[in-house]
Image 1 (cartoon, helix red, strand yellow):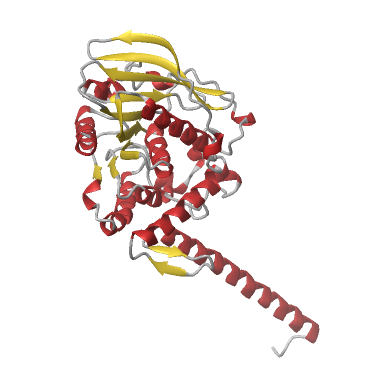
Image 2 (image 1 turned 60 degrees about the vertical axis):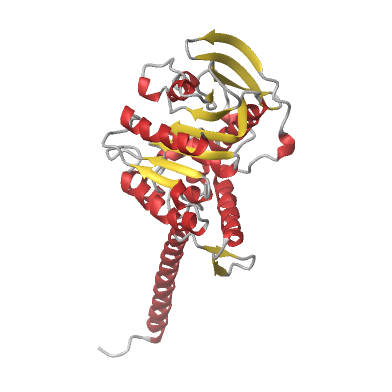
Length: 364
């Protein structure tokens, strides 16, 4: 047909150049997303101040990668408050109930200026010397802290009671906006409910350390569902927690409802996942393989039911597999474990038995 007129030829060249540029841009985005995902699973690398990647060869290298992970978590959750924000705990006990095996105290403590956290404290009656302690974090439930201390209708989730009967001091605080804890996220100084909960839990560990009954070197944390990832997030930032159990608490972001992260985006959790990262797993700066690796060399048990309809089990397996080389590098491979009970989104006796034995192994 011959060459098109010169003006048309110029237009076609411009159009082709635009298409090539568009395709290149898309490929670049996809490549960056792929690299980002790979980084979240390839944990034995870190980046220096100029962005150059290096292998993690020892614990000092791992500390650099771990610091990166905590920075990325704070990009999503908002900054962890400085220690200077702490105020006296000023624990106030409002109710004391004695049971055959433990005393239950209803109390509040000051997390920061003008903010008090309601909680239950369970102290075993029979004790010789100082006891291990466990922070017990509740699921998404209206009564909040009441469920782990046995005041709800689900005996499977009364783990603060079970552990107190086994010789642990247990502390069960309300998550912001649950139980007795009225909290206005719209007027909060925090960018996420997740970070506010982390801070409150750090103050809860402070409280446990002040108790004469508690051995401050033997503190653990356990939670179901919301409590499961609340325990994980807290333990990532607070290394005083020596043993962690998360039941039905997480899966990798790409396998959470096939990558639909809406469930993570309310004010109670991490709203920046949608506002800053468009609810896209590849854009979120951290993922759970990294959170799990942050615990090393401390003891972590993932209790992940095979039929959990919230947190897909293969994503849990992926996280454990990704974190395992870090535990091995630090000489702590026996401190990372997972249990996959044949049940749904629950914490039945057989799963609790494994969890409590795990805590006993590392805290008693």
